[in-house]
Amino acid sequence: MNKEIIDQYIICRDNCPLRFIEALAMNGFIKEARVENCDKPHYQKIVVRLINDTIVTSECRFDEEVRQSMKIIGVYTELARKNRAAEQLEVLRKPAID
Image (cartoon, rainbow, N blue to C red; front, side, top):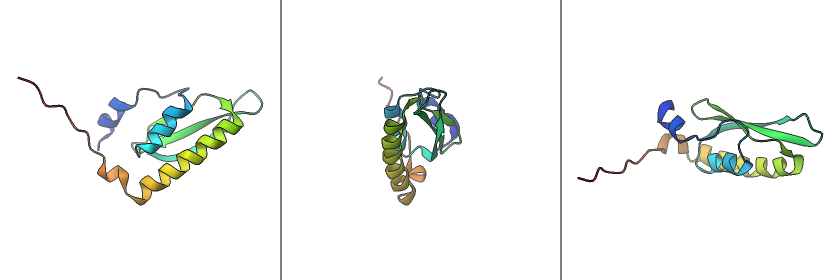
């Protein structure tokens, strides 16, 4: 799957909700994830690199929320890696109606 096709489906790139980042992982789009501290104490954000090398960041959230999301992201990312999900992704196009 090429970068342009994936880019069409990524509707958020900065300050995205944690659920959006988790959904990217569930669909096999995340290659790696890390946590960065925010300016506010005890707040962090998740930074992910997608399979097409696009960077997506989450909004700053309380560190416990980020920790839980990282567990979810880790499980789905590892599952996608084991099943080679990136190689199996395909976009289905709706047929034109005449």
